[in-house]
Amino acid sequence: MPRLRTLYSDLTILSILLILPSGAWAQAADAADQSELIRQLLQRIDRLEKRVNELEATRPAAAVVSGTPAVAAVSATPAAIVDHNHGAPVEPPTSYPSLRLSGFGDIDYNASDQHGSHNGFSEGQFILHMSSALSSRVTYFGELSMTARSDAGTGSPAAPGFNVEVERSIIRFDQSDHLKVSFGRYHTPVSYWNTQFHHGSWLQTTASRPEMVQFGGSFIPVHFVGALAEGSYSAGGLNLNYNAGIGNGRSSVLSRSGDWGDVNNNKAWLTTVYIKPDRLFGLQVGASVYRDRINANGRPETREWIESAHIVWNKERPEFIAEFFNVNHRQQGSNLVTNSQAWYAQLAYRLPVAERWKPYYRYEYIHVPLADAVFRGLNLGLSGSTLGVRYDISSFAAFKFEYRNQDRPGLGKINLAWGQTSFTF
Image (cartoon, rainbow, N blue to C red; front, side, top):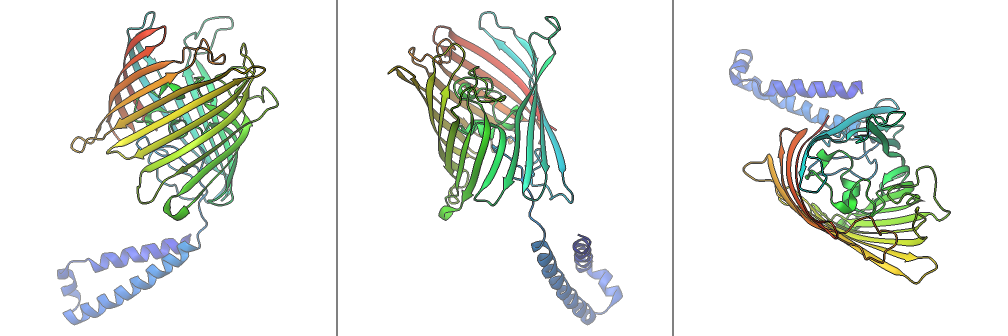
């Protein structure tokens, strides 16, 4: 807006004049003249500031696609066009579409005492985020991942070096803060971690994710294809938020979503609610329910209910995250009902003196009944601790050093040392 830029220039010039040294003023006028000139300049600044406020009030609101840096989080779906490196809102575009790119990567070193494991360096995922405003109320967000393959170069034709995956692809229509409707492929919003820390390990404090929300895992459906409605209400300072969705649940491969279509004619649905009170800034408390019917390869047809709850204190001193999951399976044509539970609690604290350092600890637990025919043979059971520290090299890169001790039923205890450098660009 040319007029707005002119007003800003006038304000800048006037401010400079007001802070000129008194010696310079003495050469130009006597004390009485200075006082009168200062009074006139202050009056003009006041008029200009009022005009700037009037013009800015008439500017169109920005379309939104959400995302925040590692120490905070990234939202489940687009909400505002945001600089993914800084987490700061980007100025609304003057033309559409307006595409913005950001990326993430990591290089890892693993050493384990597990029999048959391979110790050494590995290339983590290479991630691209794409956000674009299509209009003042329509936004698109996409996420691509490239993951190194262990069988690269083998077979005929030779396997490629990397798997390319469309992790998220979402178009959203913003009616208001109370209602936003989107369609696409999501990280299923039944878990806080799954919707706050997406691909790109720089986003999370730790080097590794909790086992129950691992990408490619089977305990919960990590991805969801369908439609989602979401919104928020102030609710007297409680800041109530909700998600409600319907779409394709698990595919015939238990760890995959129904990207090509639903494996059966029974749609999955979910709902999530959480609050973020004004008086306890940083606190988030919520719960989710997910419902689906599973027709996975080699598994009996099963009704699945997933209930989850989380409590988060999203601060640097301290950062606390805890989640609980219950996965209920009712086998069709049978009275067999099983409940598998999982939970984790993570505590991190950025040191007040050495602020680049952030030590953390996480305990996690998964219990799967032997009678659960859906999870049978997947070795999902686990109890284990993770102890580590994050060192921020800069605002865009970090070192992470992590020790993990895991105990899996039938596999025994495993010790793992993990070093990682993660970054965003």
